[in-house]
Amino acid sequence: MELNENADIDTSQVEDRRGSGGGGGGLGGLPIGGGGLVGVIITLVVAVVGGYFGINQLGGGSETGDNTNITQTCEQDNATQQLECRNVLYINSIQAYWNKATPQYFNKQYEPATTVIFSQRVNTACGAADSGVGPFYCPGDNKVYIDLTFYDVLSQQLGAPGEFAQPYVLAHEYGHHIQDITGQEAKMRQAQQGASDSQQNALSVKLELQADCYAGVWSKAATETTDKKGQKLFTSLTQQDIQEGIQTAGQIGDDVLQKRSGNPVNPEEFTHGTAAQRQQNFQKGYDSGNPESCDTSF
Ligand SMILES: [Zn+2]
Image (cartoon, rainbow, N blue to C red; front, side):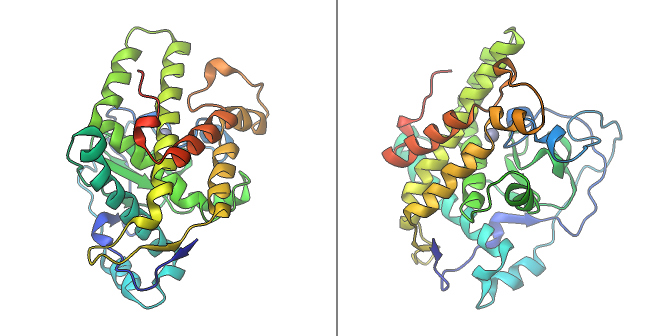
Protein backbone atom coordinates (compact mmCIF):
# COMPACT_ATOMS: atom_id res chain seq x y z
CA MET A 1 0.00 0.00 0.00
CA GLU A 2 1.34 3.39 -0.92
CA LEU A 3 -0.22 6.64 0.12
CA ASN A 4 -0.10 9.73 -2.04
CA GLU A 5 2.42 11.98 -0.30
CA ASN A 6 0.95 14.99 -2.05
CA ALA A 7 -2.65 14.43 -1.08
CA ASP A 8 -4.31 16.91 1.24
CA ILE A 9 -5.01 15.29 4.58
CA ASP A 10 -8.26 16.71 5.92
CA THR A 11 -8.01 16.82 9.70
CA SER A 12 -11.44 18.45 10.02
CA GLN A 13 -12.81 14.88 9.87
CA VAL A 14 -11.21 14.02 13.20
CA GLU A 15 -11.30 15.46 16.67
CA ASP A 16 -8.07 15.17 18.60
CA ARG A 17 -8.92 14.75 22.25
CA ARG A 18 -5.63 13.30 23.34
CA GLY A 19 -4.82 16.47 25.19
CA SER A 20 -7.91 16.38 27.39
CA GLY A 21 -8.24 14.10 30.34
CA GLY A 22 -11.43 12.19 29.71
CA GLY A 23 -13.11 11.42 32.97
CA GLY A 24 -16.49 10.24 34.07
CA GLY A 25 -19.73 10.48 32.23
CA GLY A 26 -23.28 9.28 32.41
CA LEU A 27 -24.28 6.03 30.86
CA GLY A 28 -26.20 6.24 27.66
CA GLY A 29 -26.93 3.63 25.03
CA LEU A 30 -24.42 0.94 24.32
CA PRO A 31 -22.07 1.41 21.44
CA ILE A 32 -22.50 -0.89 18.52
CA GLY A 33 -21.28 -4.31 19.36
CA GLY A 34 -21.41 -3.55 23.06
CA GLY A 35 -17.64 -3.37 23.10
CA GLY A 36 -16.19 -2.07 19.91
CA LEU A 37 -14.40 -3.94 17.21
CA VAL A 38 -13.82 -7.10 19.14
CA GLY A 39 -15.87 -9.14 21.51
CA VAL A 40 -13.85 -10.21 24.48
CA ILE A 41 -10.91 -7.89 24.26
CA ILE A 42 -12.06 -6.31 27.52
CA THR A 43 -11.17 -9.36 29.53
CA LEU A 44 -8.29 -10.23 27.31
CA VAL A 45 -6.03 -7.28 27.08
CA VAL A 46 -6.59 -4.80 29.81
CA ALA A 47 -8.27 -5.14 33.13
CA VAL A 48 -10.76 -2.45 32.42
CA VAL A 49 -12.44 -0.68 35.24
CA GLY A 50 -15.32 1.30 33.91
CA GLY A 51 -15.80 1.14 30.21
CA TYR A 52 -19.44 0.77 29.47
CA PHE A 53 -20.24 -0.96 32.69
CA GLY A 54 -19.84 0.31 36.15
CA ILE A 55 -19.28 3.98 35.52
CA ASN A 56 -21.28 5.97 37.98
CA GLN A 57 -19.67 9.35 38.05
CA LEU A 58 -21.73 12.02 36.43
CA GLY A 59 -20.48 15.18 34.89
CA GLY A 60 -18.04 15.79 32.14
CA GLY A 61 -20.48 16.29 29.33
CA SER A 62 -19.07 18.59 26.75
CA GLU A 63 -15.55 17.73 25.83
CA THR A 64 -13.94 19.15 22.78
CA GLY A 65 -10.77 18.38 20.98
CA ASP A 66 -7.94 20.60 19.90
CA ASN A 67 -6.81 19.94 16.35
CA THR A 68 -4.01 22.50 16.30
CA ASN A 69 -1.19 19.98 16.63
CA ILE A 70 -2.56 17.26 14.41
CA THR A 71 -3.37 19.76 11.66
CA GLN A 72 0.14 21.18 11.76
CA THR A 73 1.67 17.72 11.71
CA CYS A 74 -0.46 16.51 8.83
CA GLU A 75 0.35 19.56 6.70
CA GLN A 76 4.05 18.73 6.75
CA ASP A 77 5.81 17.08 3.82
CA ASN A 78 6.39 13.78 5.54
CA ALA A 79 2.89 13.58 6.96
CA THR A 80 2.16 10.08 5.69
CA GLN A 81 5.02 8.79 7.82
CA GLN A 82 3.07 9.79 10.91
CA LEU A 83 0.64 7.26 12.34
CA GLU A 84 -1.99 9.87 13.17
CA CYS A 85 -1.88 11.45 9.71
CA ARG A 86 -2.10 8.10 7.96
CA ASN A 87 -5.17 7.37 10.02
CA VAL A 88 -6.73 10.68 9.04
CA LEU A 89 -6.02 9.85 5.40
CA TYR A 90 -7.71 6.46 5.81
CA ILE A 91 -10.73 8.18 7.33
CA ASN A 92 -10.79 10.69 4.46
CA SER A 93 -10.75 7.84 1.98
CA ILE A 94 -13.46 5.82 3.73
CA GLN A 95 -15.74 8.83 3.92
CA ALA A 96 -15.03 9.85 0.34
CA TYR A 97 -16.11 6.38 -0.75
CA TRP A 98 -19.33 6.35 1.26
CA ASN A 99 -20.16 9.90 0.26
CA LYS A 100 -20.59 8.55 -3.25
CA ALA A 101 -21.80 5.05 -2.46
CA THR A 102 -24.51 5.86 0.08
CA PRO A 103 -26.78 7.69 -2.40
CA GLN A 104 -25.89 5.22 -5.12
CA TYR A 105 -26.69 2.02 -3.23
CA PHE A 106 -28.99 3.11 -0.43
CA ASN A 107 -30.68 6.17 -1.86
CA LYS A 108 -29.67 8.17 1.22
CA GLN A 109 -27.39 11.11 1.73
CA TYR A 110 -24.13 10.35 3.44
CA GLU A 111 -23.66 12.27 6.68
CA PRO A 112 -20.02 12.77 7.64
CA ALA A 113 -18.99 11.20 10.93
CA THR A 114 -16.10 12.51 12.99
CA THR A 115 -13.52 10.18 14.43
CA VAL A 116 -12.47 11.11 17.93
CA ILE A 117 -8.85 10.22 18.65
CA PHE A 118 -8.48 9.87 22.39
CA SER A 119 -6.05 8.69 24.96
CA GLN A 120 -7.07 6.20 27.62
CA ARG A 121 -10.52 7.51 28.46
CA VAL A 122 -13.24 9.44 26.69
CA ASN A 123 -16.77 10.69 27.25
CA THR A 124 -19.28 9.81 24.58
CA ALA A 125 -23.04 9.91 24.14
CA CYS A 126 -22.86 6.16 24.78
CA GLY A 127 -21.19 6.69 28.14
CA ALA A 128 -17.61 6.99 29.28
CA ALA A 129 -15.25 4.59 27.59
CA ASP A 130 -11.87 3.15 28.31
CA SER A 131 -9.25 2.27 25.68
CA GLY A 132 -9.53 -1.37 26.67
CA VAL A 133 -12.81 -1.78 24.80
CA GLY A 134 -11.07 -1.11 21.53
CA PRO A 135 -12.33 1.22 18.78
CA PHE A 136 -16.07 1.63 18.52
CA TYR A 137 -18.87 3.61 16.91
CA CYS A 138 -21.42 5.43 19.04
CA PRO A 139 -24.80 5.86 17.30
CA GLY A 140 -25.81 8.42 19.95
CA ASP A 141 -23.39 11.04 18.65
CA ASN A 142 -22.49 9.48 15.28
CA LYS A 143 -18.81 9.37 16.08
CA VAL A 144 -16.09 6.77 15.79
CA TYR A 145 -13.77 6.55 18.80
CA ILE A 146 -10.24 5.23 18.73
CA ASP A 147 -7.18 5.26 20.93
CA LEU A 148 -4.38 4.75 18.42
CA THR A 149 -2.46 2.59 20.89
CA PHE A 150 -5.02 -0.09 19.97
CA TYR A 151 -2.82 -0.82 16.97
CA ASP A 152 -0.01 -1.81 19.35
CA VAL A 153 -2.42 -4.27 20.95
CA LEU A 154 -3.31 -5.62 17.51
CA SER A 155 0.30 -6.05 16.45
CA GLN A 156 1.90 -7.11 19.72
CA GLN A 157 -0.82 -9.12 21.42
CA LEU A 158 -3.33 -10.16 18.80
CA GLY A 159 -1.05 -11.19 15.96
CA ALA A 160 -2.15 -8.59 13.43
CA PRO A 161 0.91 -6.42 12.80
CA GLY A 162 0.20 -5.34 9.22
CA GLU A 163 -0.38 -1.70 8.38
CA PHE A 164 -3.62 -2.56 6.61
CA ALA A 165 -5.06 -3.60 9.97
CA GLN A 166 -5.52 0.11 10.58
CA PRO A 167 -7.75 1.06 7.65
CA TYR A 168 -9.60 -2.23 8.12
CA VAL A 169 -10.43 -1.28 11.72
CA LEU A 170 -11.56 2.20 10.71
CA ALA A 171 -13.57 0.95 7.73
CA HIS A 172 -15.31 -1.56 10.00
CA GLU A 173 -16.34 1.24 12.38
CA TYR A 174 -17.55 3.42 9.52
CA GLY A 175 -19.51 0.39 8.39
CA HIS A 176 -21.48 0.79 11.61
CA HIS A 177 -22.09 4.42 10.72
CA ILE A 178 -23.53 3.28 7.40
CA GLN A 179 -25.79 0.85 9.28
CA ASP A 180 -26.94 3.80 11.35
CA ILE A 181 -27.71 5.90 8.24
CA THR A 182 -29.51 3.10 6.44
CA GLY A 183 -31.55 2.12 9.50
CA GLN A 184 -30.12 -1.39 9.60
CA GLU A 185 -28.72 -0.87 13.08
CA ALA A 186 -32.14 0.22 14.37
CA LYS A 187 -33.75 -2.78 12.70
CA MET A 188 -31.28 -5.09 14.39
CA ARG A 189 -31.89 -3.51 17.81
CA GLN A 190 -35.61 -3.96 17.29
CA ALA A 191 -35.15 -7.61 16.42
CA GLN A 192 -33.15 -8.03 19.62
CA GLN A 193 -36.06 -6.89 21.78
CA GLY A 194 -37.43 -9.81 23.71
CA ALA A 195 -35.04 -12.26 22.10
CA SER A 196 -33.00 -14.69 24.17
CA ASP A 197 -29.40 -13.84 24.97
CA SER A 198 -28.06 -16.22 22.37
CA GLN A 199 -30.47 -14.88 19.74
CA GLN A 200 -29.42 -11.34 20.59
CA ASN A 201 -25.80 -12.37 20.16
CA ALA A 202 -26.56 -14.00 16.82
CA LEU A 203 -28.13 -10.74 15.61
CA SER A 204 -25.08 -8.84 16.82
CA VAL A 205 -22.87 -11.20 14.84
CA LYS A 206 -24.84 -10.42 11.67
CA LEU A 207 -24.40 -6.71 12.20
CA GLU A 208 -20.68 -7.10 12.84
CA LEU A 209 -20.14 -9.32 9.81
CA GLN A 210 -21.94 -6.79 7.65
CA ALA A 211 -19.54 -4.12 8.95
CA ASP A 212 -16.62 -6.39 7.99
CA CYS A 213 -18.15 -6.80 4.55
CA TYR A 214 -18.48 -3.01 4.22
CA ALA A 215 -14.80 -2.71 5.14
CA GLY A 216 -14.02 -5.05 2.25
CA VAL A 217 -16.21 -3.02 -0.09
CA TRP A 218 -14.32 0.15 0.77
CA SER A 219 -10.96 -1.64 0.32
CA LYS A 220 -11.90 -2.45 -3.24
CA ALA A 221 -12.60 1.19 -4.00
CA ALA A 222 -9.82 2.74 -1.90
CA THR A 223 -7.45 3.51 -4.75
CA GLU A 224 -10.23 5.45 -6.51
CA THR A 225 -10.86 7.81 -3.61
CA THR A 226 -9.57 11.36 -3.71
CA ASP A 227 -9.04 14.43 -1.57
CA LYS A 228 -11.05 17.62 -2.14
CA LYS A 229 -8.78 18.64 -4.98
CA GLY A 230 -9.37 15.36 -6.77
CA GLN A 231 -5.92 13.94 -5.95
CA LYS A 232 -5.81 10.23 -5.25
CA LEU A 233 -5.32 9.32 -1.61
CA PHE A 234 -3.73 5.94 -2.33
CA THR A 235 -1.32 5.36 -5.16
CA SER A 236 -1.37 1.61 -4.75
CA LEU A 237 -2.99 -1.15 -2.79
CA THR A 238 -1.78 -4.67 -3.26
CA GLN A 239 -2.99 -8.18 -2.65
CA GLN A 240 -0.64 -8.25 0.31
CA ASP A 241 -2.59 -5.39 1.91
CA ILE A 242 -5.82 -7.26 1.43
CA GLN A 243 -4.18 -10.32 2.96
CA GLU A 244 -3.28 -8.20 5.99
CA GLY A 245 -6.90 -7.17 6.28
CA ILE A 246 -7.98 -10.80 6.11
CA GLN A 247 -5.33 -11.74 8.65
CA THR A 248 -6.59 -9.07 11.03
CA ALA A 249 -10.18 -10.23 10.63
CA GLY A 250 -9.01 -13.73 11.50
CA GLN A 251 -7.14 -12.67 14.62
CA ILE A 252 -10.16 -10.95 16.12
CA GLY A 253 -12.72 -13.68 15.51
CA ASP A 254 -14.66 -14.57 18.65
CA ASP A 255 -13.41 -18.15 18.64
CA VAL A 256 -9.78 -17.07 18.37
CA LEU A 257 -10.17 -14.47 21.11
CA GLN A 258 -11.96 -16.89 23.41
CA LYS A 259 -9.20 -19.45 22.95
CA ARG A 260 -6.52 -16.85 23.43
CA SER A 261 -8.04 -15.74 26.71
CA GLY A 262 -8.02 -19.33 27.94
CA ASN A 263 -11.80 -19.70 27.87
CA PRO A 264 -13.65 -22.55 26.23
CA VAL A 265 -15.06 -21.65 22.84
CA ASN A 266 -18.75 -20.98 23.29
CA PRO A 267 -20.63 -20.05 20.09
CA GLU A 268 -23.62 -18.78 22.08
CA GLU A 269 -21.43 -16.01 23.40
CA PHE A 270 -20.18 -14.93 20.00
CA THR A 271 -21.02 -11.30 19.29
CA HIS A 272 -18.78 -10.57 16.30
CA GLY A 273 -18.45 -13.86 14.45
CA THR A 274 -15.77 -16.51 14.09
CA ALA A 275 -12.43 -15.85 12.46
CA ALA A 276 -13.59 -17.70 9.35
CA GLN A 277 -16.84 -15.71 9.17
CA ARG A 278 -15.07 -12.39 9.61
CA GLN A 279 -12.56 -13.26 6.92
CA GLN A 280 -15.24 -14.48 4.53
CA ASN A 281 -17.29 -11.33 4.95
CA PHE A 282 -14.36 -8.99 4.44
CA GLN A 283 -13.41 -11.00 1.36
CA LYS A 284 -16.98 -11.00 0.05
CA GLY A 285 -17.13 -7.21 0.23
CA TYR A 286 -13.75 -6.91 -1.42
CA ASP A 287 -14.58 -9.32 -4.21
CA SER A 288 -17.90 -7.72 -5.05
CA GLY A 289 -17.05 -4.07 -4.36
CA ASN A 290 -20.77 -3.73 -3.82
CA PRO A 291 -22.39 -3.05 -0.43
CA GLU A 292 -25.53 -4.81 -1.64
CA SER A 293 -23.59 -8.05 -1.49
CA CYS A 294 -23.36 -7.67 2.29
CA ASP A 295 -26.10 -9.55 4.16
CA THR A 296 -28.93 -7.26 5.24
CA SER A 297 -31.47 -9.73 6.60
CA PHE A 298 -32.08 -8.54 10.12
ZN1 LIG B 1 -18.16 -3.66 15.07
